[in-house]
Length: 392
Image 1 (cartoon, rainbow, N blue to C red):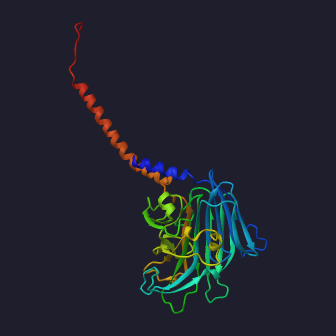
Image 2 (cartoon, rainbow, N blue to C red):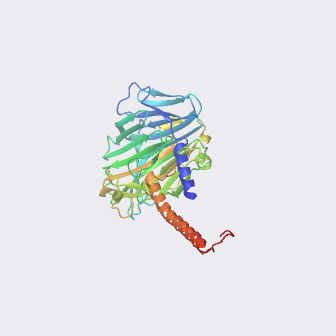
């Protein structure tokens, strides 16, 4: 019975509220933009509402914004040459949620703990001064995807920050490990640190991402960190945990923003179990929206008291993995979405295996019961005395 309930809930999570009609534009309304300017605007319509998304790299800081509105609403982007300065929604949004990766931190992990701490020597690297180039994109009604490379043009730090954002308007698993779940209400974000120059005076360099999370839940609220066990490791071998950071609205009503990920990163471009490493997050802390950023421009007309702004460090590394220099590569993936975070479901193959595993013993047991019952009936009939009538 429990298994049937699980299958039913999985089917409902796939069917309900997942499909949307999407339209996307690159640098909408910008006459002077080049491949060095990347702002993607997406409108995703369901039967009852619209989610407006902004993917922006024009200000250096990778930023993703979600705004939930009624149907038939629109958004205009106003530009000052190659800089977006205003985001005009035709109506006040019901809810907004945004993230930004504003800094990289290089830290000297001399104790080989695998995560950043206040005791570590560390150097922040603001992404505000990074230049981004669009290297690949798909803008269709079946998928929206952009891939950008960020570099410091005038710095001693060489290397590339590789960021890929992907949206598909239905429920599915990502093609690459850790095979996170896509939905029409979420965007998949892949971040890779490729051949980043490390500090000469650090012998144990690792990197951590500094992320800002913003929502219209109110300054006095707090976001919630949760870890839960997944059904199995079919999609991410060896990893049974799923981590979620939920806004208060999502935590209480499943009607707000969230990020979801598995605590695993990778030290090789080809993601395999053998190249996996750990991911840890720091406690959430109150923060502020960066000045002259896309976040500041988007939330400019919101009251300060109506905005919840918190930050978190995401550290990628594992004790004994020989630090960043061993591979000169680190990657991590997460999804950002609105509503209830998607739940893991069994694939058809796993359902068949479980069905066979449960069905065969049940069938054998049932066959044994039937055999015993039939044998006893036959035995009872053979032991009954024969009755003769008067005519006989």
